[in-house]
Length: 503
Image 1: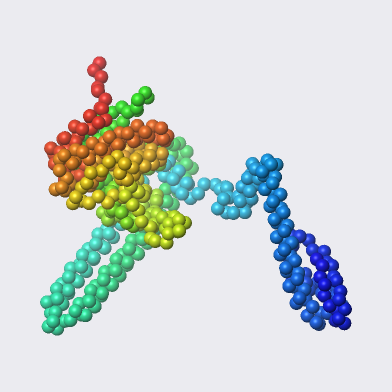
Image 2 (image 1 turned 45 degrees about the vertical axis):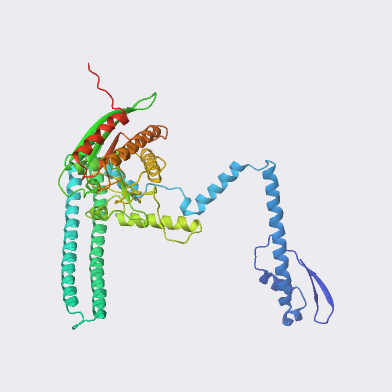
């Protein structure tokens, strides 16, 4: 660094000081050290002011030139193949793992993994009845709180309805429209306050149950291992026929088929067509004492998960209210409560929209779907919420390239990749029958869904992962028996049911 200045007596002098580039220290401090080499009088003449300006410009210019030359040399070496990219990547990876917690290698299993392993060992041991009894006890407690909440809400609604009727009858007599608006606002505030109070109480109760339940499971497995190491070994507890999961369900009509798909290597699948309410598959797990709790517990951490496709209107991410109500009738011990799962999905969508330059609220379109996971529903572990905007009053015609059909294909692909061996889909892409859904329309719609599902299942053999062993074709619960028989007869024609061999 070379600096020219005027001394205290007006003579011009030049000062040279060695500066190491790149310079990463404080240039102001360096300026004070340089002034110390001048005549002592210069310290009192503020010689460092102009020196700092020149020194700062010099450091910034030389640092930039250094980095430019360094980067240009690196690029030239990379173009000429003189850089070992693999070692460079390895070194960067090492630095990230050593410095950034997010990328650091885990030294042991997480609490979630420890609990999952303990639960899996426990359900395949003689301790399984204890788990079911504990869960039923917890579910009963939450169910009682929910019942009390709905009773108080109904009482408040009835009371507010009487108050509003009295006010309306006195309108223009002793009551004005402003009084009615004020009463409406007061009613809304009271309802909101009541709901928030009960939701807070339920959330605290679920949190306490979840913490207590997880600690109990891990402690039970630990005690069993200490007292009798062989007692927690995985036994051959059978999950049984999947149809047993529906033994307690009031299905109005049902028919099953066995098919073989594939051109050369044949794969056997079970096809079941049935009529039921879609929310029956998402009913509370421990509402009644039946085998569903046993089957759901055994299948929870297995490669035989159960899934269902539920049609949901477009707009914000939201599940059907009946499903949310059923999922909240007991504590979700293995995953987040359904509202928390939906909030996380909304947050992920919001981040994705912001990344794309959009600042609007997250919105899903027909054919999109989101997934919620459950361990406290009676007949499903995974719900695929498929967005569909088809009007219930005027059903239209769709083709195999319709977004909802393509969304169904993506769901089958996701299911086969994530250990879902039984999947229930809406056979008419509708959950309710309406007067506009004529017999010819229903036959055309069912044929389209059947053929597309068959093609997707054949295609799934190339995707890898778990095969969908059982495909359930769900028809609306209010379908006529004649139409059900007609559509059930189409299954054998579309899927080509395997003929039994007579020995």
